[in-house]
Image 1: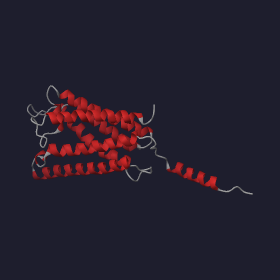
Image 2 (image 1 turned 180 degrees about the vertical axis):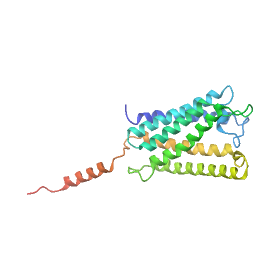
Image 3 (image 1 turned 120 degrees about the horizontal axis):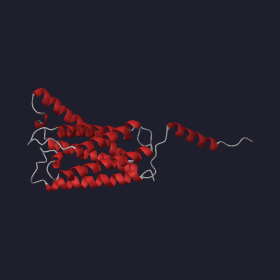
Image 4 (image 1 turned 90 degrees about the vertical axis):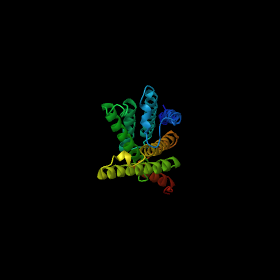
Length: 231
């Protein structure tokens, strides 16, 4: 199997999941306020399995992208673990429904919240670790885009954390001091775009990270070949 093939499958699965979620968003505009209601609201009700299936596709696609990145030595151990953490968090949100506040809190809703937190924190960490300029490799447009989106995702997370802190200090519910649905969608769009940029990079043939020692050896070998023979 070609090392970039899992990333191509991953992009296909992730794209399909994203398309389904976008369809749910458009079809529910008359029923759900996207500024206040979170994306996970689609998981409630008898048709909630559609949302769960779509998130599961996104999680599976992320795993495929991570496999290609690891096989091609484009991601370190920490970056790979963080990317798998994002996938695991997505699977948790897909399998467990969020709180249905018309009924009350539930164990499923608590697990869903933990999964969402893990996913939203792990993806920016993974992207920054994998595409950071301190990693020695050939840069590409996809890595630059992914790194920029990763930094934007970090800023989203910091902003949300700041709002939670302000809400805690002021005694107000943190989800009341910001348009939660809009903020969550902004974070989700940024993180998914970063994931797709990673996928494009992993699916493109010819990108391979070389260890510094190998590069030095290659350079030394080239220099040796240019040395004229002794007479």
